[in-house]
Length: 288
Image 1 (cartoon, rainbow, N blue to C red):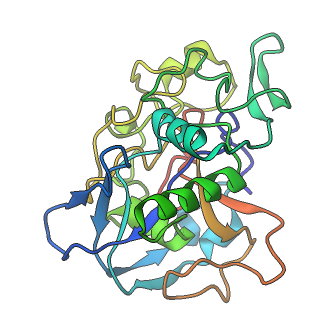
Image 2: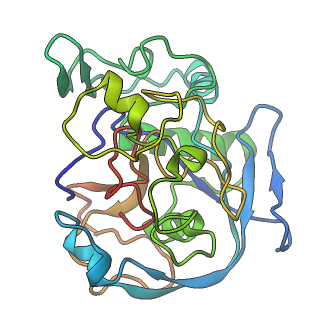
Image 3: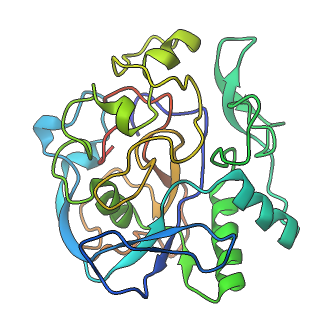
């Protein structure tokens, strides 16, 4: 795992569904119900998963340097942005679901991040006063899976968590650079909520920042930053997103057709993607 973790919002929801719309050059979107998340159709294609070894920063995950060609055989749909608190609240109210409390969050008394067994998605700590359009955070992989399963039952459609390959393909949106907008981190404040001057002023973490200021020292509401080439928002930064794959320290042997890489005996650890509002430039990349 990377040496610096986006620990403030340990998990948020991002999910995929099989797309019924025809592929098009222009982004297509749909909702399966009035209050369902907006889904954006991602076309089929192929890409290089990972990063050339020379571009992997010090402390980066060694698996990332084992770049592999992956083919995405058919179109799918991904949420336009991270699942909001309002959308998750509807799930909880409808299903009566109760997740286990506890997550990593900012401790203002100690001035650092740490595990807090009392925290839940209702009071995640950051932001201090969460609103309906903030992304839901302080949720586990089990919570994310339960939400997707509930949405599938409600709509009769095949909702699930995305695979790691599907996520990176969607995040890159046809780009081959380190980030969807290019190689340099200095334009991050247009495209993503990462650790920048705003965050460094409020949370002194002793790590590099993006060298710009977006006005959001912590978690931002969804949709505040520019979309990528597929029309997806907040893929990089804001809050990290749960992926279906088991975590592995190597890409050798992984499926080449964008399926999730999971084990029959279950996963000891799951993959988080996208980084967060505390991610320094080295971690705010498509392949990180």
